[in-house]
Image (tube, rainbow, N blue to C red):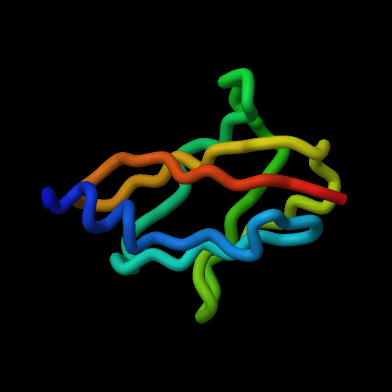
Length: 88
């Protein structure tokens, strides 16, 4: 298992599906959100902001449309995407 796969596998998004907020728990505290894309691959530019809290990276998604999304995350060792779903 490569370092990249290990970090991606240990990074969690919850709740999933979500309706109000998502929390990203990453094993590396320097992990950050690079982009969010919808199911068609379009970037969700300017429609989100990430806050780093003691719980992890928190993103408010309550105004987003139902559907499937991917968080693109970066850490010093990896660039990877994690899927999540919005259901209101």
